[in-house]
Image (cartoon, rainbow, N blue to C red; front, top):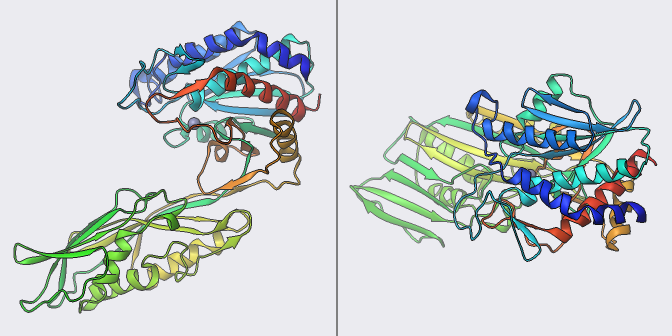
Length: 455
Ligand SMILES: [Zn+2]
């Protein structure tokens, strides 16, 4: 692929200007803004991307401003490169204007430069280099421009629900190299239990955690207790203090992302382990003992029975992220993830059964299925072959606990744009992409396309 590489190197300025055109349109989600599904900015950015495709000579489709694509090649089968044009809000702390795509020291700075407008531009340049080299493709290559990756991938749900063609294979340059060939299945659930049945001790209020997918750093409970209540020997990181004739119990934890809860400490679990030492009665006692006894500070769902394991992706990750109570009911928000070679059926029903068996009601449930394509499959072999050839890095593909855009449509995997050891700058102030890395991405993408098509 030396010829393609030379071509792509010669297109560096065109690549930089393509990134700039996309970054200079602020495409933060604004549902319904300007009459567009994800807002005017997102729709304008899609229009700009499609305009660039037109300038390069590719036919395009805009699917109701939900997403769009361009194609090159002939044949029944379609290979997809899936990127997205929406960005997260810029936030504070920038040394460069976030939407000007300033070039400085060999980098382009701006929101979306690495996630994911840079990789989208690199994909376009890769396809143009293939076309300009006169390489004929006997499969169609479709670069899909998603518009809602950052906030739920409703764009790809729309694509699939409205007859969008499913690729035979493909990749999304919206993860990391070498290749992510496994992503755990993710379950988000809320359970609630009535605790109105109180004795001398009662829970008046509980507040812990900020989100299902973060291990809680802090949790507190306000309880009513008899006059002679003595907190006793307090465990580590638990404090008890009087508050307006009641008692405030506070627990400290360590916040980490729920894809690796074992690296943190669950403040809600710690709080309940202490509460369980107090003589609550009735349904309050049932609820407290259940959370303390079945979850506590465990991070794999051991005693709930959902701790699955495989060598590829490790244990089930289990996180109780949020807990609240108004004194009448307790509600807990869970986020748990099962290993890539296991099934939802081996995991979720056990959790649900344990909760409902103790009188909890399921209030919310959402499942993002796992994704796994084995190393024996052509897609994994081809993408790894290209990556190794370009980088000399012989490490294998990875499985992760998080979910990437690859889950949004079938038969694709996350491949690039971030190389091992590169600084992580997505969603941060001063997001940038190095121009060298961008060119390298374009070369790898071009080679991967020709490899998957079988040129
Ligand atoms: Zn992204």
